[in-house]
Image 1 (cartoon, rainbow, N blue to C red):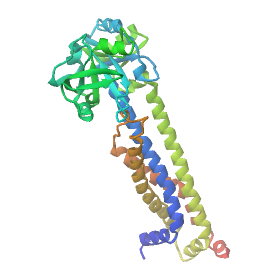
Image 2 (tube, rainbow, N blue to C red; image 1 turned 90 degrees about the vertical axis):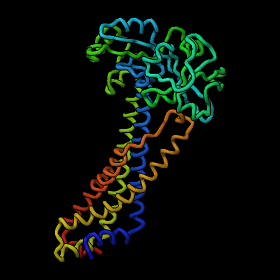
Image 3 (cartoon, helix red, strand yellow; image 1 turned 135 degrees about the vertical axis):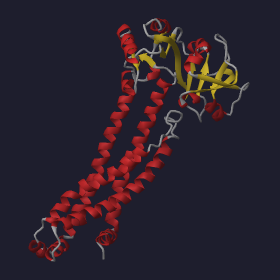
Image 4 (cartoon, rainbow, N blue to C red; image 1 turned 30 degrees about the horizontal axis):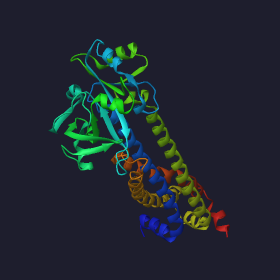
Length: 372
């Protein structure tokens, strides 16, 4: 029998214990996959709102709990437009509201039609709404497909009836699932007259974005200017909390999995003391004993990891249909998360089985043979 065959034989001979260990690893990997995907997807949704303006810089109120709670006076955006190096400055009101049971979270954007080109809006069908019109709206083409709406159709939002004047797309995929209204219309509906949620800034050609960012931050200390993903934490504490929750969940999953592997490996060690003694007495080296114990743990953990990946995928599909996350959580399957999950399983196997493997390797053959 080959060495690999011996490892597989030993695992098969203790099926119940191997299944319990694999189960612990599977649960941990499921948690890593589900939490990792949830974190990445929610981050993309949150940062997608900031990117939807197709701008060089995005401006929001500093340190809000949720980016949608940001409040900026429309007059401040006009003043931002006068900062040296700024080519264009526009403000948009962004609100999240329920459309129906199947679409409980739809992003609404209030924007002046004259700013649509700078905003990155490309009209696909129909026409834009009037700057001060009421009862008119535009739909992103993806949202229009979801709602089964076309130009000329009507829909109800927050007890108000609107007619679809046009369908559009944006340079950011997130924006294709939004609906757009005249700015005064949305301000009136949410009682936010003279206010916007976000500001979007275009920088003049040849001017440093960082230089303009610093000028805006210095002149408007109550606002935060986002130039890269590293700045997102300045305007939305939710992103920081999401990352912290993911890290904490990963650590907890690792502790659970390592404890399971360690417990099973130790029990296996005490049951097989005479076996290890015999192997040592017939000339097996300590390195070979360690390889045997670690190899068994790796095989069991690999099986657990594969099961965990499947469970993680199932958990993600369950999560996206929860009312609390529907419309906000759009799963992004990153191969890096699945790769890290497999690596996580191997690390768990190595750490959990190292101590039992060392005890087996340094066991005295004579002492082992005396055990009953």
